Amino acid sequence: MTDSTTQHTNAMILNGKELSNQIKVEIAEQVKAIVDSGKRPPHLAAILVGEDGASKTYVKNKELACERVGFASTLLRLDASTSEEDLLQKIAEINANPDIDGLIVQLPLPKHISENKVTQAIDPTKDVDGFHDVNVGKLTKGEDTFISATPYGIIQLLDRYNIETSGKHCVVVGRSNIVGRPMSILMSRSDNPGNSTVTLCHSRTKNLGDFTRMADILIVALGRPEFVTGDMVKPGATVIDVGISRVDADNQRGYVLKGDVEYDSCAAVAGAITPVPGGVGPMTIIGLLQNTLKSYQLRNA
Ligand code: NDP
Image 1: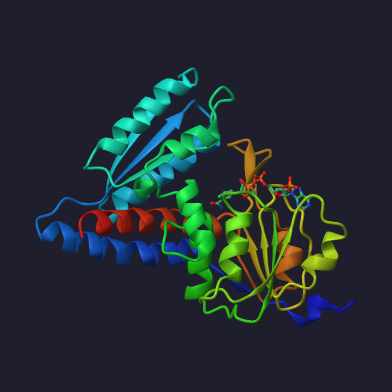
Image 2 (image 1 turned 90 degrees about the vertical axis):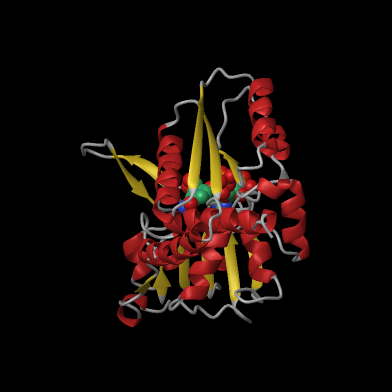
């Protein structure tokens, strides 16, 4: 095996936090121009059901991001015991509200509510998370749509950092509907970033390391902290770590955030790598903001 630590000790850090701040300034300029012309700003609504700690943090971050770029935002907090019917009714009300451009329902939902029913109840033209079947279908066909926020953020990260994807081998680990599968479709599309040869791995993949070691671009979204280690990475590869897990720690919060990638050993081998936190997470919010702006522009065209 290659002695990678002596070959690639200076992986470029793909700093999603910094890049997201830069893109927020760009979005804020567009919003300012809209408001200066006498029109209302884009408006994102979020529904949070229950008290899940991580979900509360994600929704709070989305609210803060809206504030930062000048969007209006509405947060509807519902009790964990809210019925599916009541939630669907709230979604219908927001669908019908002409002053709201985007609607997200923070997942996961309490067990008694069908995530699929909820996702499909959102008006596809306000589905800024890109989870509705109509938008997934368009993505699959390469049509213009709301690309789900995390894959959209990753695509922009690759683009802004000029990571060459055409003709490269991209290995995606994880086939969820919100990250892995759409990511694999985007990387194989005939566009830039894209045009990669894609391998999609999952829990039934045998000898996972044999595939990850072939990746020029390795995108990991499986939800198991520090699962991918340096010996699973090809020297010089671009490593995108989507995972965010709370791992118990002896600190004030009682936990630390870990990615799916063991950062130190992988950074020693990779050519470029995203940190956790500060990599894909902030770019996901950018995907969401851009989809909301796009929805606004489409309905005010
Ligand atoms: P899911 O649990 O929905 O999917 C996990 C995927 O990983 C599944 O396809 C599963 O395979 C696969 N998998 C599980 N174990 C293995 C294994 N041992 N080897 C290979 N594949 C495996 O997770 P999500 O896609 O929703 O999220 C993944 C991670 O990304 C989580 O940590 C989540 O918190 C994080 N996340 C981060 C976001 C961000 O903004 N940074 C946004 C969204 C998610 P199978 O299908 O066979 O079960």
